[in-house]
Length: 437
Ligand code: S3P
Image (cartoon, rainbow, N blue to C red):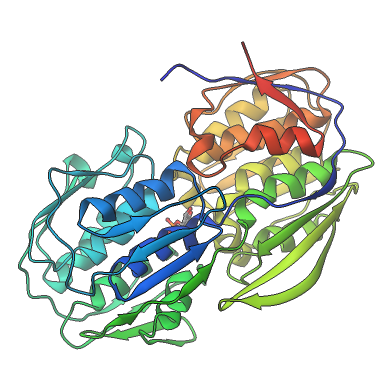
């Protein structure tokens, strides 16, 4: 694939009402749970990004008949039942997708067949011991590549047992992995999380008729149940909406409404943080769609101010920090982020890569072990590198809106993993970004 670089010209203002693509976390789970349910699951609003398509292809490779997605994001999954998956031919390549590999390691922990889960160069650098350790405690036979990294080799035929597991880090992927393995384990499996993380797995399993009980920060599931097919309406991804929330806040005279955005309280940290910074954000038309809260979100320009980001909000906004760092660069005064060391093990080291890029465009930003200190001020133009990370590429696109000159962002191919047609939507909203020829 040839390299794609973006060029952003300053001076845009954002306006209009539009819908960003479907939620990535919910899209992945709709395929996984629909595949092992009894009956036919209909999904609308499915994210047609590379990450969720990799999950879809993986389940097709394990014998599940899946129709779509069509142009409207409609997908029909003919579930094979909890024990109906078939051995795939060869290994399953999950591309860039951490959610796929970590959730599927739990789901595939006690099948009758062996399976190998692998990924691209970024995924192959990411830590997997966080899932293989609890799985091993359950009795799963799982091997990793060097240093606890992919590929994961899971041996079939294990009889596994429920555990009571306290997670060392706040991770929805680890929680989900253990709960999904728990469906195949003898007895009860409980997971305790150190801080609240996204709860889409718990909500969607309940929607498929498989009970997950939540008590404060502990979630429990009984092994040996079954899932019943249902309809899933995937809302727009708040993580994709976040770029436009920041863009419309920093670009003068902006006024946009983002339609049908998922506002699950375990995901809305970005709204809380931006409001603390002085953003003008309104939730309209709040409703519940298929067990998930949804709203239209109106954002108007505002002068942001620097804050100390409360650590409790960090896991609730974990994917939004690249663009929140950009918001801080445009804010008046100092913003301090702490307790966000998980950012170092995302698709890239998001603390280092963002600090390097911000410094390259003249921002006073200092990386710390678990966050960043940013002094707002004028943002110059220049060249930054996304390090193959979709959210870094999109964050710097917003940085270009009010910079003193053009910003060139290198290696933006992976924007497609989570946000197909990012440039088209950005252009229609009023941002001058294009592929550099
Ligand atoms: C996700 C959980 C988060 C998030 C990722 C999606 C999920 O990862 O960063 O983009 O769908 O469960 P961690 O569990 O590693 O925090």
